[in-house]
Image (cartoon, rainbow, N blue to C red):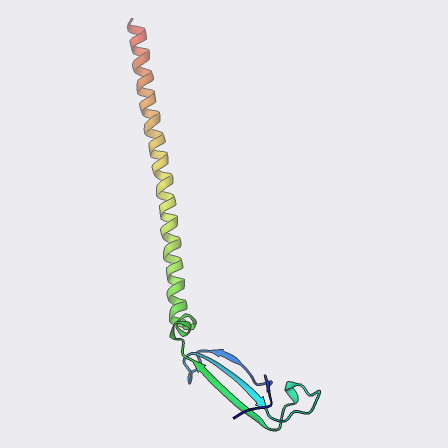
Length: 118
């Protein structure tokens, strides 16, 4: 079937993951006889609808509430893990600084004792 012109009608739409399609659904209409100067919204007579569905299960998965919930949980888990790692790192730095100060103090005490004995 050949059509004179191709128009996007006012009810044309793109919709992800409709119940019938389970993918990306596109609708458009063809108009056979359109008077000169008429736009797509005035294409009322001789309108043919054409629907196509591209099955994209991955895209539908990303739009699903289950994926959104899992992604949210993963963000929380990663955030908590990063915070715990930062706190542990800071604690280890404090401990190493304290032990270095203790070593420095004991070395100074030994030096002072050796000087005072001599």
